[in-house]
Amino acid sequence: MVGCLPYSRAGAGTLVFSKEAPDLLYGIGECLAKLGALPETLVWDREGALHAGEGRPTAPFAALCGELRVGWCFLEPHDPQSKGVVERLQGYLETSFEPGRSFANELDFQAQLERWFCERANVRFHRTLRCRPIDRLAEELTVMRPLPERLPDVDRRLVTRIPPDPYVRVDSNDYSLDPRLAGRRVELRVSQREVSAVALDTGELACRHVRSFARHRTITALEHARALRELRGAPSEPEVEQRPLQVYDALIPA
Image 1 (cartoon, rainbow, N blue to C red):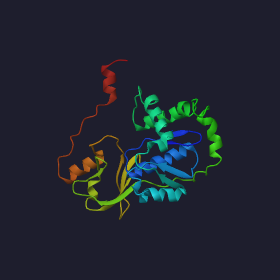
Image 2 (cartoon, helix red, strand yellow):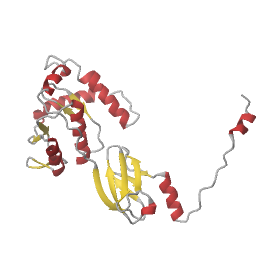
Image 3 (cartoon, rainbow, N blue to C red):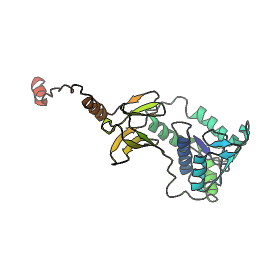
């Protein structure tokens, strides 16, 4: 997700998991935090997770705008020119940042993206402005409202019952749950970094996984696999002898 201020043309970007509302709302908050202040209005095209039709916001987007006390404006259909500022920044990112790079994981992607904005996009000479975006940013921030102490919580939450086959699907991936809690209700929380679940009656942790960008994977915690084997009466894992390191020291002289 890419955000851009209209006067300074300063931009910011955030990698999100999907185009679902919780992920987009997280991206909006992170872009605002990186830009450093709140605008009067958020301008969007008619993104399905944010636009409910006829210029009306969806409930999650309206709630975010209400908490931040910002307005919204949805562009007319087939009118990309109205947000040409951000479209040009997006095109610049696709041609200047993405080609020829490799990324270790999503955290590395985000770190490189932030450096690119700080060291390249926001400090380059802008031909339309005849100056650098960073030169106008300080002036623009003076007429914007300060950020709140804490951005709104937009994590996805739902309540479910742990099935006999103890997995829960998030996006297209299946994450394991503690099989010893089968049949009990848990609250699932999905953030940008983590998938976790807690039993509603006792507060016991049912799972905690790193959220995966990969698709169609089954992600099983080792302790969940072992507990499931025990509950199903499967033979225990064979014990593997661990030879003392002194034996190898004797065989391989220093």
